[in-house]
Image (tube, rainbow, N blue to C red; front, side, top):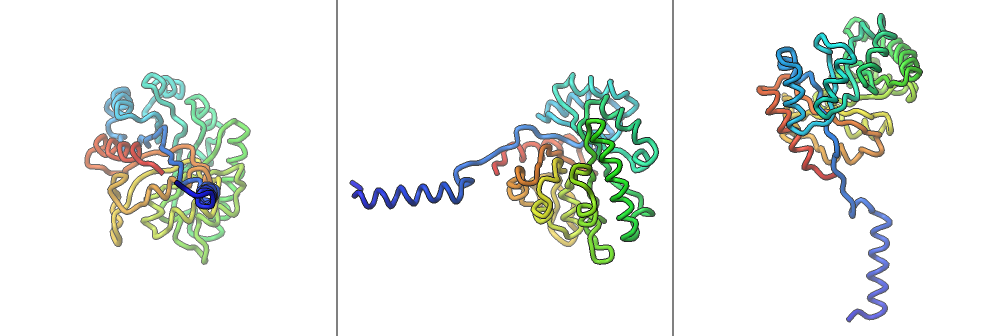
Length: 277
């Protein structure tokens, strides 16, 4: 039997551990996993409804669009709902951002999106530090307009966003020069790693600004080949342990050029579904 002193010592140590490290006694899993439909773009072009059906059958409950394949916004909303899914966001072109922003926001609302995402900017408008400063001003204005329409604008990084321009990475420049209420970020983990960046450092440096994540894995250096989630070098447990602090709301599986897009999507889904963090 424990003596009174031993009992108090044991109880004190247990209580201290609970206060200091509550995550030691709690794990979390992703309850809804999404997919960026760019990875099944060929199948969508041939059989839109059948592709959504097959994506839902894997277990995905969220999709992110990159084009509507000739469907109307209301048609998009109905098709997604028909297969028991939601579509939190869609990627749009830079040209639409600068020439058709009001129309783009109207269509996003009609399709049932919460986010409109800029995934890429042309090389000619991102060569210098001044170019990036002008882009930050544009994203601020556009983001406030999106907020007024009940939507959010997000910026999706590419490999060039982590290569310094005049000593500062474009990603850091955009984050510092934009209003968090106007601009959110969609962290593409692969392109961050491919560029030599650190996705964990980005999540920690800008807490609350990453409601969207693209989950795609990277092979070992120097090639950093794109791989299915769980097949490469990314520490996904560490990435997703920042879910609360980074503000992560949606995780979308993606692979740009998979040998078989449905097999790739299913492999990544199964890994994330089992993962505790």
